[in-house]
Length: 322
Image 1: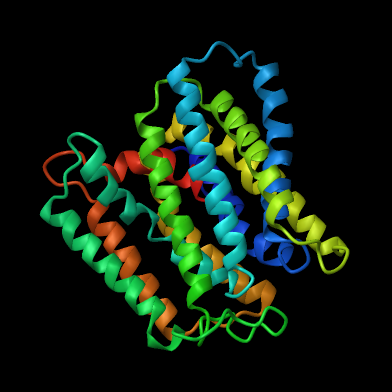
Image 2: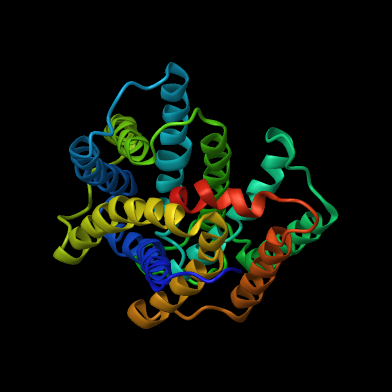
């Protein structure tokens, strides 16, 4: 890996903290705010911050009609659905476990790129990495997660991934798959500015999420406390809006290959925050599963004779991950 400036490392660490903290903030927010309204709140706040910034920079200009279609799909599959699935799932499992489950996203991109992106076929190296990642998911789920009902939201008895946590874990995995699809869409979309795209996508996503929340979310059982409101504000301002700006600058300065380090750092950060701030206790098989998944990502992303998706998948993947 070529030498990078201290500013590049500072941005990488900042982005790890911003995106890795999203799982903890979501866990806190959904304790008193329905998942749908957590999604609406973070998207609306991010759009309110990014749109004026894009307008101030003069980046909001004409957009190709195909660009609007791709942005609408990315808004749905890269924001509304995964945010909702992850928020819903985090009612029943630890924030650290959610971060571990999201580590499968780059591997999911491998399979999708093989089908939809020319020149991104599954080489033997990528197949080995994909198989290791799949084994890691199997270790994460484990036979003890097979229960009859969703975990008890009041006691959190299955928050670490015990019996009955399977629906929550599958919801978070579904969010990871949504991010993978969104990554492919972002790579295939017509060329357009990164900041205005992020601003318009978050606005469109907020407008999509609002009527859904109005239609399906029950009233909150109580008024949210200050910590839950603060977590929601942090999700919108830091993990969504500011993180997007830092990401675009890091890509421009250091390139996507350097930014790929996020795939390894974010799950570890999410687990550490859950342990230190929420008192979570990851089970040994969670850590074994994480090790297998990260090893699979490392093997699959290591380039052999030609460039593979390990470089480009991060161009869209981490931005959409939170």
